[in-house]
Each structure stands twice: as C-alpha cells, then as structure tokens.
Image (cartoon, rainbow, N blue to C red; front, side, top):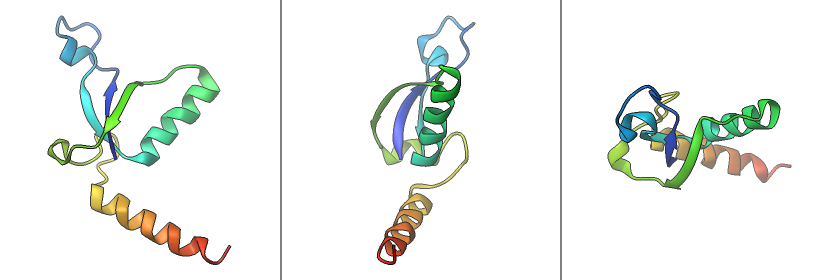
Length: 81
C-alpha cells in the first residue's frame, strides 16, 4: 500500500480535488503502470509511503491486511518454484 497523488476533478479550482492523495494497493499501482506502458498515460503522479489513516485502496477497496496476507501467500509459493 502506498499514498498516491492521482488525477481527480481537473475542472475544480482546488488543487486537493484536482490531484487528491489516496491510498492505493500495490496491485492497482502495477495496473496503472501497465496502462502507462500501453497508452503512455498514468493516473498516478506521485507515490509516497503508506499511512494507515488513509484506509483501504481507493480503486479496489483492498485493505492493508488483505494485501499483507496476499504477499505472505505469494512468498510461501516462492519456496516451491
């Protein structure tokens, strides 16, 4: 999980609404990276360390605990590769 500045309501006069800071999981960040690789555009403009005060992923609603559980499961399978 990371805190990211993303594209928001660009018609707003408020910078906080144009580029809000939201929590995103690693999977959504990776999907945005693949979108950038394909189309040359990204909705993410800045990535910072995760702050639990921001809660779950803005795009898919995954919690930090769910992400940690997925990573632990993936790490377990790495032993068998």
